[in-house]
Length: 71
Image 1 (tube, helix red, strand yellow):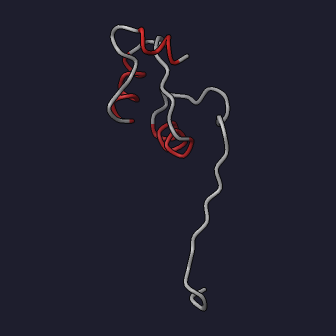
Image 2: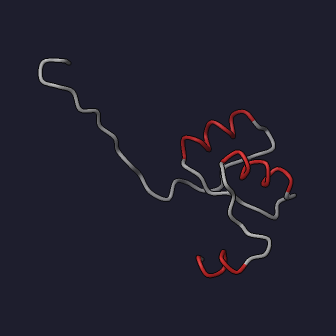
């Protein structure tokens, strides 16, 4: 996939999620953009012309560290 992406002209890369979303909207189905799942949920809830295809590529868990006795 990396070799294919690197060989495309114009480049498939964007500088921001906003640029990626705009490119998808203007591409008439010829461009897909990969981003973090929470961002995709946020964007697809606000723009009816966009949809998520498939599920997350992986899953991450997060934790928060607090000093003892601060819970």
